[in-house]
Length: 354
Image (cartoon, rainbow, N blue to C red; front, side):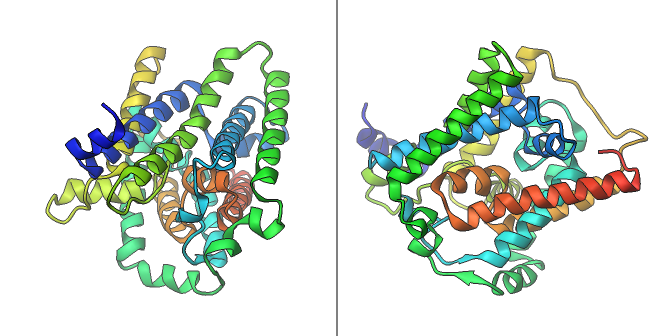
């Protein structure tokens, strides 16, 4: 059965749900087995000991970058249609939202995707933080935090289209994007195998985690090309999807229609759960004396508000949007790292657990 038949039989929304489920399951399993974590990578860099966690993150990011740029170079993906480039963007939102998100992920001991993965491993602290994150995301999209978010985003805007495309701004085009992605991959392999000699299984897991983002872009682009309805091309993002799942759980009558995000989060959870069971990592963990509940709650709120303000999380904006060389996505990724580094320094000076 080809894609046209699937769309006719099951409908666009269900096919998109299946695509999201496939991508989410692959990412969840690979991220769990490799301990993929942007927060841990930042902390290694702050401590001047970039090694295990940074090398996994960098290899996954390079694989994502290369996979997406191959699709763009081959004409199989049209970045101009993506939400990270097509509509008007906010530079103030990207910078401040990234700073908020980075600080929040230090306090919660994980970014949005990591919290979901840890929740599937039995970590109740991550589960609580994830719920607070989802509530804050919804409040920032259409609740009492929305006016504040809209006000900050309006401070410094950028037109959609070429003005948000770094490859267009720099004039290097798809060829330059592909060359930069190849350079990133070469450096990632060098650093990884310098840190992990002969760890081919771990390298494969990091590559799969990164390439799952390219898979998401490719699948939704193919579906958009075959569908008679307007289909938004997209890939992994855990902020808006978290709010959508929350609304779906609270009220089926007011929840959004099914689509890519509806399959993404549950499948990521299941993929991580399978990875934890396979590796013997599943165990229930709650709060202990050294765990500060207030830190987790404040961090989750900062991440939720920051994610909506910036247009995504470390995976959603940083990797999914960054792989398209979106200006605001790259600003968000840089701001997340800076915000996390600043929060790490504050935590160290205050003597708080990190």
